Image: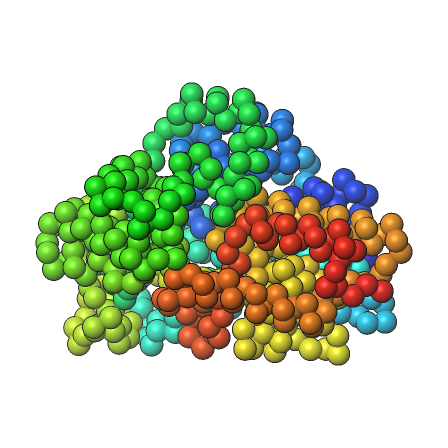
Length: 548
């Protein structure tokens, strides 16, 4: 049996940096990745129009000043191909592949109490089986091997377990079917085809304008409309890039002090809605709509605290939608009624304009639910829409899905699935009571998806690296979150969210997009206080953790 100090699961941005840090500290480390390359979510999500919603100069590593200076992004918001090139550049520049095994899916991880370590079962998978469209990702293995590691780090990602609803007749469809989160690497040509897109979340909002340009006809099946702000993407402003690179550390530090770890330079407003005149409110919303991006949500300091402020911003976006979409009925269907921002705000490039095209139709499946998928299409409201291809843009089993698909067993053989059957519980989103020496990067209870993921990843990786060094220096064999600390933190996460408008709508932040999943608000609101808490825990000899 092969033995390592640490096994890392996943080779996305979290896994890559974790391997880099641990190797530099003298630990033996091995990462296992189900795909045949690095990149994580950017390896799998190759759908048309896939793009990051955080500006390129911020969605990047900061651990190496040389890397920051040498890499140049071509656009304000980077597309998937460029981000994947970046991930590969990092892997090559720091020679990380020699500690990564590809086409290897971690099937199980069982804690060995006698040995104070983990036995990890790894199955070899073919590239085609690595991300099945219609499976749970736990099978497709062959030639399994068990390895041992003192520590396991789950770098499995928050948005990596594709969610495919259990539509009746899905296997009967004779055309092609795809999921945006498991897109064919060779791409898809929709020229001349009748295409259906199921879903109107972030992935769909990016993909629909691109698919519409190719397809003979595109039918969009929408259950719930989403707010979307223009990205105003374009070529990188070279002057802006030079300014940032001239002071990258200071730029990063300013962002580190922001609630979501990003956007310090997008002029966030610090006054509340009630303190601003009606004329100034309108001016701000117009200005930020034209600028594009997340700055719109920073128009007022209390956008997600004050219902009045939120209603004004939401009404403004609905007004814009009705001004863009020619057909009033279609515009009404595309206009959300919920709180703006309680679901992750989408950024788009011509999404609403796409519904003015003669080859695009919108079907409201909230009033006429999808009944079944047939051999030749999709039936809704008693009528069948004939299709040559179906794209399921139905999102992910967010934050917990990838972990639930691995048979993780802690003390006494208890499974993580059973521990989390009433909702995920973790201390700081990093450790789980009953599961010693198991770390989760950007797990539930950490800022993760409500922050800039790259700085959040780096903060977690650095914390874990410091922790295992501290343990090594003091001769500790195991670290485990205490139930008391875990319970207090879970309650705190809920209290912080409850003081805002976030929990008011059915979002994947709550797990509401997955039937039967317990509804618990999973991410922690506030990057700076979270970092402060993590630092305090470490400074107090890992307060809230039991060491042995």
